[in-house]
Length: 178
Image (cartoon, rainbow, N blue to C red; front, side, top):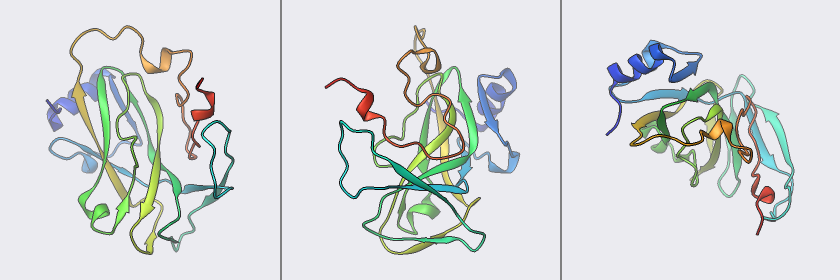
């Protein structure tokens, strides 16, 4: 079951969902639109190693936008900081974004109860496309949880992405033992 607009508003009022900045115009029937932040990043090396800490370089989107290219992988970030304390948040692309050939995540569309931060986006494009800071990029939907949560994500000792800031965060796979 997905939360409706009235349920999302109730949860915001209760403090179990937090969105900053919040704009009532961005609330859909059962989702909340999020926007592309002004910071992007790219991995420094073309070959990545899952066991290594792969460095990224950050850059800002200029006012006139920036063209993203196929066969390049970009990390972006939502302009919105979110907290979700009682529901499972899912980030999906907007249909308008998809129709421009922009994918906003490769595999990481689901958040955890207790996630607090800006969402890092895993951006790839089908053809060259100019993007702008502040453009609608995705939508958050919220699912209720059945049962008690023993440990929320932001309370886990090994939560690698808790408290993400307004700049994209690289893969932390290297922190896993394998």
